[in-house]
Amino acid sequence: AQSVTQLGSHVSVSEGALVLLRCNYSSSVPPYLFWYVQYPNQGLQLLLKYTSAATLVKGINGFEAEFKKSETSFHLTKPSAHMSDAAEYFCAVSDRSFGNEKLTFGTGTRLTIIP
Amino acid sequence: NAGVTQTPKFRVLKTGQSMTLLCAQDMNHEYMYWYRQDPGMGLRLIHYSVGEGTTAKGEVPDGYNVSRLKKQNFLLGLESAAPSQTSVYFCASSYGLTAPQPQHFGDGTRLSIL
Image (cartoon, rainbow over all chains, first blue to last red; front, side, top):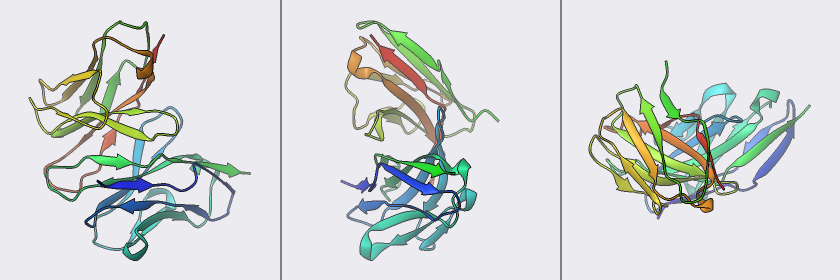
């Protein structure tokens, strides 16, 4: 069964500093991978997705993620943190089988931005 | 531009009561999902549907039932609510006919069972 592990349930960075949120996946076949963001009292919004077209994926709000098969990782980065980035971030994996688009989510990482 | 709408947004129930959560999407999506979100556990899939008239069990289906009588609506029912079902419930939908399609989420229903 596929799964994702997010290292660090809480991450704090200073405004303007690099944001790095870690995600490792476990899958028997190359999966589809997603990053979602959740702001307080809201649903999840898609940040970016990996579909094998390119290993470096750019998303919204200046975020990007790099798929590394050798490390089974899909870490999320942003060069310079902004106060508005404070939220909870979820990594998710989806089976590549057509008609089986269930997502398996990680447990989330809460990002705090220090002024 | 409504997207996915969940009703109600908040609800408090007593143990043993029943209720139905409604999810409506206006994007003509084939697939719909119900998740629950609990602290430190991420989102867990309860039930899902791959089209009108179909439903299937997810990771944590016990104590819940669902129906998809119309393509745009997906109902989640609790027949006899238990305190363990206190959670935030999210509905999502996706296009479904080609992969990978991102899921679009509603804003959630916060349910407390006393």
